[in-house]
Length: 157
Image (tube, rainbow, N blue to C red):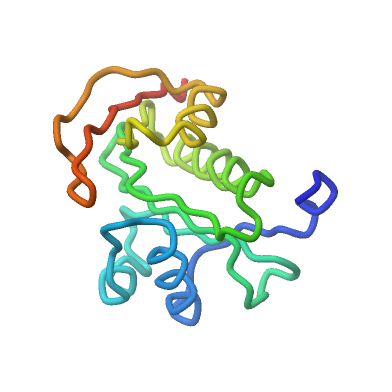
């Protein structure tokens, strides 16, 4: 995906119609995927930022990526972010990340945390380039396969 292609990617709140594509993307991206029921339960919750990046118009049906953030007062947890393989490494993940950081900041969040697989060099580089720093480790956090998670933090102020 070229930088000009990003002009055709729109980030908006997720809707029930998006969930089947989100679940397919989730299964492709993660070894321990969330269920459709889990995603449906997130819709419309005030304390959750659940967004999708779609190709084309805001009502577009092609989900290129999604993100889930739990808001907890002045802190937030980036629980999940994924981009479909066909546009991965094309800037959609960074676009989603910047959108959720901006939205969280506007909602009063001061710090955002996340866990990332130690071996996920691409994601780690993106997070580090966006100002996240390693603050800890969760041993054997991931189970398929077993791997440590790095805890990253970013100040939003």
